[in-house]
Length: 606
Image (cartoon, rainbow, N blue to C red):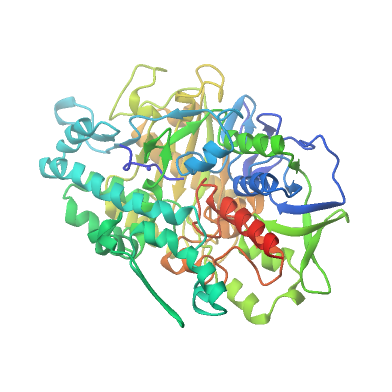
């Protein structure tokens, strides 16, 4: 999710509120019974959950020779990457809403373009309007960023010529650091136990997992009892002498870095939003720099750091992956709610039981659910040690996000960049940052949520994908996504009520109204998804869009836990393949890809 500011220069009232199942599904592959084959009693591999990572895993498992089935709980495929018709005639990316992080090799391997994936590129891609009185009747100022560096410098120069001059170097610096991470995304984390214990042959085999770190440019000096490996001169590789810069950005508060580069508040605040998007953290919190890096390391159509809208909504990604998987022979089923992973007397997974009592046998089971759901709700507790269960309980799923999907009968018209009614300007295709012209506003919003209250001036990231994709709304109308934060899971210790939801949405709309008068009158329907709603509808524990916080203690070797980072679980034959594993959240596909290859390798060894 995220806006990707940098890198590529990252007629019904209140329909389907909080997930009432009135939504129609965009496309046909996502409907119940989407596989024409009947559900069999036995498969080589079963994937729990039809989110994009589960579908990627299934496709690669099937390509690897394993007869595979995907079992999705909901009536629609995609998990958080889903399209739903919440208001009649309006098709929403109901949860995730932008594409960038999908790994290029997965895009190419699965021939997703052939299977219907179409992406509308955005340029410019970030628009931050100001709330201020214009000088001598002029509109309020705004900041627009895109792929044209000269245009960016001109925009930034409205606030600071010094910052305008520094910006290209900052972009190049971030792109170098982000590019160095790529080798780490497409392989499992280093197998530390394998490298340091066991027979020499096993240790040498495990040493192959060091390769991504070598490519990344992080110096590895591993002593292996009988041999000593001192791998390469880091200066010759991607990070080289920038290793200290990389270390800083993944550990420091993003404000420490931004304040060193820039002076102007609107630019700093705009960049800071990508460091906190989807995370219960503030720009001054240690580790917020990595979240920024995570959101600028994507690629679309070979353009580094670019973000785009998927035609038909984000469900189009899931549909394309599902179509590719089915072309290889994967069976995909919706409305198949898994109740439990079946564990044999030997302690190994042997299939699943559905809530309707149906049992399906398999050699392996891959769970696209969060680690919490997988091990607390789906796995028999007797199969897990008390110590393991206690560790699972400690994973942080805190989320600040309330997603509001809005149907409007008129294009928002911003005071800072007025346009004739109904005619989109370049800024309408952007991630539009409201209440983001000051870091102090972001910090205050964060502190309110940490004190158990929804922000009274929330950070709002607005997108209007129907500006580029005409398939999403009736003529003259638009779908608007408001990705808002900060909101707590509980309001001062109690559950959210319908009144709370409506009041928070009204607050968000009041702020939009200040930037774009007439917005509230244009609303014909809205869908309000607080953290508990995101958890209930999409299975996102805590409402966390990343399947677990992207904090330093839950990354790479420690994602989701230090002893659970290689996709395998304590139950033999049970694997994790969702965003709760390395390399984490976003519509990336890497967790599914890595988990599938790990599973196939294990089966070949046994």
